[in-house]
Image 1 (cartoon, rainbow, N blue to C red):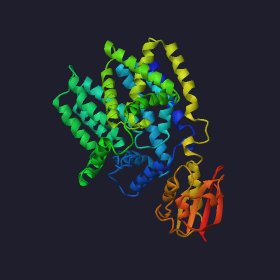
Image 2 (image 1 turned 90 degrees about the vertical axis):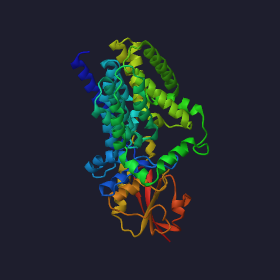
Image 3 (image 1 turned 60 degrees about the vertical axis):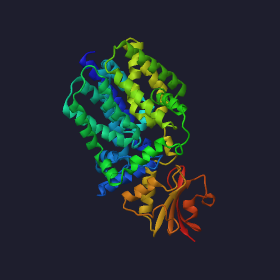
Image 4 (image 1 turned 30 degrees about the horizontal axis):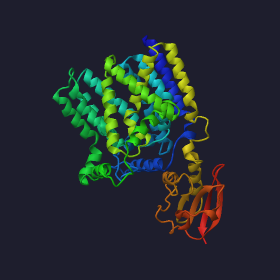
Length: 476
């Protein structure tokens, strides 16, 4: 393809990606308890309280590394703590992934495969969903793509600084999700199988140095605390008494589920068919040896699959996030081979995928469905009401989003330098600000955060939106 044509289409894909990710961002951003908790950690850092730990994992009771907090720091600083900073952070890294996917597709086959892959990434419902939520694992989309690209560059022409940089990136990505340890295995083991362009011994030296630099903050905490999190992680992985039943069906289910979410508007059957076709196409390409560096993606797939097999338990989509963009590239390669590189058929097929995926992009929704009726602007409004209201010792709670402690509201109050009691001291409060649906009454509330407050009377009531009220209640 001509250089001008390639640049035109790449610019078009980038513009479309920016439109789909930044369109009505304030309305469609995800800001739940997890995002509020992470935002509070970054806000604490802005206020001078730095950390060596990231967020706690959803299972096992161990912590991730803090690297994502440090990556988010400049965004929160720029936006003065506004929680939309987290969504901007994730969307920016999502956009930065687009040219990386293009370059990776170009390295593996040609520019056309790179453009197909970048377009598929741009219109993917799962990738757009990831861009709307600041979640510890999601930046791994960008860094996993970067790591694979760096490894290809190193195989092509070895440089010490590239090996060092690769190690740093691996140290970072492991702090985002423990399953990303597959990249450490990939970087150390894959070069062993190379017959040509095998990197020198210095590769392993600089790779190791970079890894320890990248993981240094988390490693410092571990050394100080006898490798507490590493031990908890290993105990959880190899214990049969925690984390639910082990079954290979968990691993077999997650791949078509992820494929369906990435490429086919969350259609499981289409995802199953698509994943099988990708595997068949990849095996054929590897056997024919007509595609450069495809062995890297095959080896990575093996490592991710093996890690999932060892884990054995039910896996959400982000557990195999290390292979998300590789799956897109392999699917793009399959499209290119099926249609023999003919532009009209490729464009038509990509447009069909866009039509299939469009309903799952949630562009016409009032807010993201996962917000369940309360978005950032509603929490800002509730915080403003409380900030300007006369009150004594108070606390906050809500019967919404499965988050009785009202973590998003607590963050907005912290941003305004307000100080409600923490969520262990509801009984000591004199005033309780309580968000509940308009379809419910206070008398029917049985949640602990409300009942432990004690007998109460309504002092004031405000409407937050069409679905929720916030009550100010005082003790009788």
